[in-house]
Length: 119
Image 1: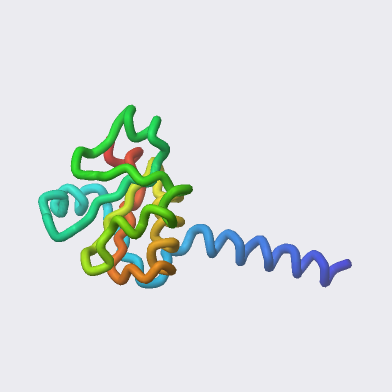
Image 2 (image 1 turned 60 degrees about the horizontal axis):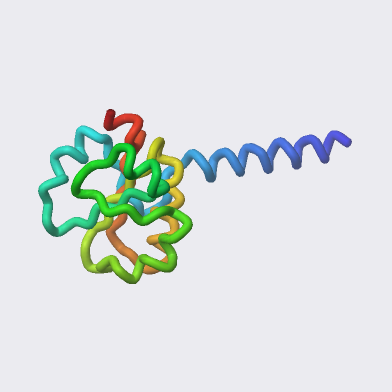
């Protein structure tokens, strides 16, 4: 029984680490850093929130591609240019960053804290 408890605790710790640690090869920036980069025409800005969330409040330079549609719509993005991803809190954009890396995007940036930190 004690071994089972150790295994369960280990799996929970591993799960939490995967959720909280940054994705390898993905740059993490704050909203303060984002404000400096918004004018960069060589970057693509993607908001992965739902259309309703996006409509309610968004940053003008960001294009809305909901997370659940990202795999299908990623071909509309250039793999040569950096992709900056945002969501509400940073969790969905972290997932989106992983998706983009798996699809072959080399330069992916996640906005820490998302729109909650922006407001």
